[in-house]
Amino acid sequence: MSEKNLAARARDIEAWVEDRFVDPRGIVYTYIDTKHEKPLTDAFFEPGQVPIHLPGTEGYTPAEWHNYENCGMTTSAYLQALLYRFSVDKDPAALKRARRCFAAIRDVYEMGKQLDEGFFPKIYGNRFSEQTSTDQVLYAMLALDHYHWYAEDAERKEASEMIASLIRFWVKRGYRYKYFWIQDMLWPLGRFPSLLLMGYKHSGDETFKKEYDRLLAEGVNQGPIESRLAPKLSGEAKPLPYEIRHNAWIIGELEGSVSMDVMELDYLLRNDPENEWVGQWKKSIKQIWDEGKLVLAPDGTMYVHVLVDMKTGKPRRPEPEFFRESEGKDDWIGFRYVAGARSADSTFIARAGIQGYTHVRDPAIREASRHIIRSLDRKGLRSYYDPERYPPELRHRTQFYSGDGVTNWLWGYWQGRAQGVFTADDTCINGSNR
Image (cartoon, rainbow, N blue to C red):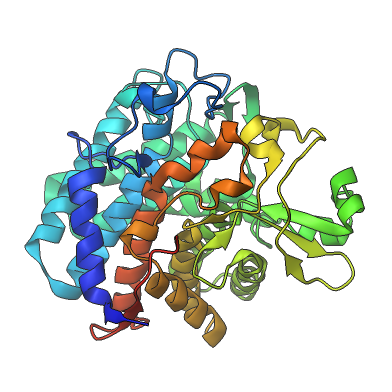
């Protein structure tokens, strides 16, 4: 198998991002199409296809939704990657691009003022919407915190003010806000201790420290909040008819769960190292990693869904099938279909593994993360593979390059370089996983 230098691949991927993924304002697209390597247009979606386009996003076209759905995450992840690159190679071009990402995040923050100070919106079509999610906020706040070290004086002040306002938005609402069609939803409380601690660090506002202490005293973050499998194993989540029929637990979309839990726990461990829960936080990183590794495919991608045998605990790839029973907020066509397809969003898990390895020195975590990064080149960074596993109305999902996948690849690689997980001489597996 031919190989080339992994550092050269990182430069190639970054150049590709700059050329194809960055919009005129510096926002990183969530998806671009694989044929033209451009942001999606409404002509992309053919008759009969069912694009994800959720209630609560009326007034925005499917292309506007897809191009910008996760842009708070993608832009923030790219900022993290550029900062870690600058820490390694001191290239002023990396810092210049990081400054542009900071300005783009600030623009999104400014748009949010149309609703309230500290509201961080999803900007479908590059314009304001009333939709948000705490994963967007988490990525943005952590990126702002990291950028603070490299910022100019005026930017540093702006970053601290934004961080405080972003978490204050949630505190004053009791951590409730709508999610698409779900009104006044209580968001996962485990998302907030790291953000409260960050807000306190940047503002000195005792309200944030009191809330941080209160949530920890209530047991928040004593275990991984994003676990998909543990509630099934413990009996907290009763088996669905699908699971009984297959004699296996179904888990999926693990990339977001693993990456967010590790991001939050990493921040707590670095910024509150004397806390009595430090040992438990480290165990939580290992627990969520052990869950995430079940979905990893041998070629460096991940399976979007896996079945975990109820007796043996062994994972297996499911056969394509519609998921007939309702699962509440996941009850729409893209999530009711069990594809067992592969995805290059395994880079989320790799980046989380590189972060987690700082605290849990398990060689298996290090090597699995290295394998993912070494295995995926830019042509392999697709949202989904295996069109034959999808019905025609969903097959377009295999025609996206993933902004999440590519930015987490770069973040994982450059943080890995900064932490010694990779060296400048590392080679990579040359293949696009198609």
